[in-house]
Image 1 (spheres, rainbow, N blue to C red):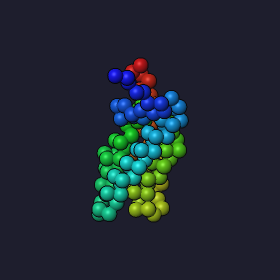
Image 2: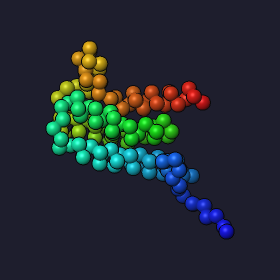
Image 3: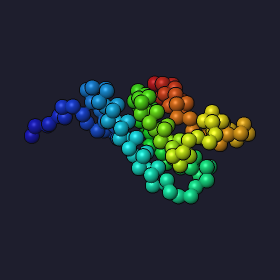
Image 4: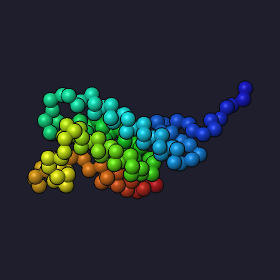
Amino acid sequence: KEIKWPESKVKTLGLWLSVEPEIAALLNYDEKVEKIRKILSCWKYRRLTLLGRITVLKSLASSQIVYLLSSLPSNYNALNQINKLFYQFLWNGKGDKIKRKIMINDYCDGGLKMIDLFSFNKALKQHGSRNT
């Protein structure tokens, strides 16, 4: 029996692979942005404190992209979209009430340990390169 090979893309180990890296990145990141959007919409109307919302972002939303960020090149357009989703969720769609630089600080520095998506991405990239 003859094996049929996919011509443009294939999904393996949870990631889309393609002969064109732009298509693979687009498929992977778009899929995760949509998944994060759905997760946050499920939690949107629950009466959570600010710390509760940060916990949802750190445990449920950011965990969706760990493997993706550590395996693929960064897609800063998608990271900006995800960051925007995070802060819209955090502030119920209204503008920021506390500066983002303050929010990511430790408690002892007046912050709430909010995830900094770009530092998170950078840390995952550095961790991955050390193991190779």
